[in-house]
Amino acid sequence: MTSYQVSLPENMRAIIDGRMKAGGFTDAADYLCHLVCEDEVGASVQTFEDELLERLMAESKSPAGIDIERIKGDIEQRRLQELRNEVIKGVEEADRGELEPLDMEAIIREGRKRMAAAQITHRAVG
Image 1 (spheres, rainbow, N blue to C red):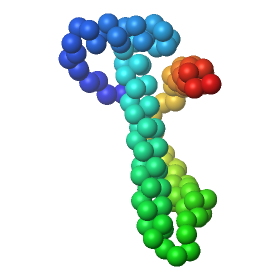
Image 2: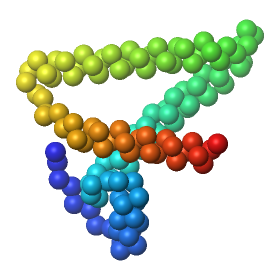
Image 3: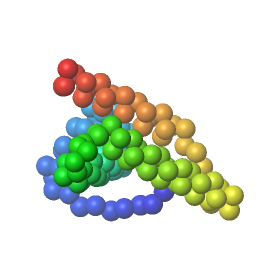
């Protein structure tokens, strides 16, 4: 793991401390890793939505009309291929011995945080 030094205003430290306690994070680094993961997921969703909108705009000008399900399927197939490419890349890295130890405790913590976040989101939406 890499170390990263960050300077924050005091009020942000209080926010981070509160979120750490409320979310069951072990430390500030754990919480910040969670935020970066959430940001990455959000960026991925935004990319999907942007591409979908772009395709919808392009197809709305065609006489055949818009087939949203086909467009979604095309995008999902492309993203699935990208995921397959990442898996292949990971296998190649493993074959070259470029592995990091698996931290099961960190995986369990992350799973619990995601479950808690999903429950909070569900309560807020539902």
